[in-house]
Length: 277
Image (cartoon, rainbow, N blue to C red; front, top):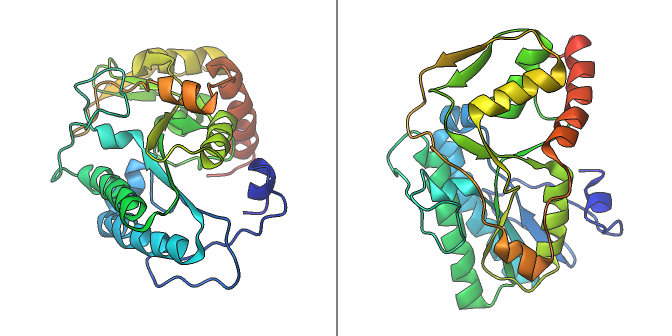
């Protein structure tokens, strides 16, 4: 938490980390509440399904209650997963999604969908100044090596010259946004008057197989690409329509995939070759 104020351009702010599923009380004024609490890696939310649902429901309720009491702006970190396995492509904010509520991934998808509904209810009923960001695949240095998401998994496998595991035939698509671009988008959204959801992500789309080939090329790895069965309810496509972010926030990503992966690779190489797990 030490450098968040610097990243958000508010070094005078004091940031507090709280357990949001319990009653929240903070002394003194609060300018803004940024609700990012939730497992986000499939490995995590599949292992912690009830906790994921609780932080999206109870946690959002408690955090919104604090925002209401303090007259603070409230920013909810939502996700592109609210679109599920989309039938609209690219995904726009007015698309309602295609989610399996009882599938294994539903605990994360529905927790975030509920969190969005609760956020808008507090905005309409209590006048809370709300912001909702729908975050698409984001990556960067210091991600957990065993995070389970595609970027750290592929990078770790490539650095070790292990087989790179692609699920399904690799034709499913994703769009990858570098973390500094995401933070810039968050700052702009927090300081805007946009009350509803806004997509923040990189609209450059590629297949997972192409992404694996890109990782091998950038790392110079000797890894081979191998295929594994596709997980249940895995989305076939994912690309944000960022028209709203461009027009309302003046935002679009600046870091290319090649530059972002290279910067992330340097960090991963140091940690992996240094013995980190």
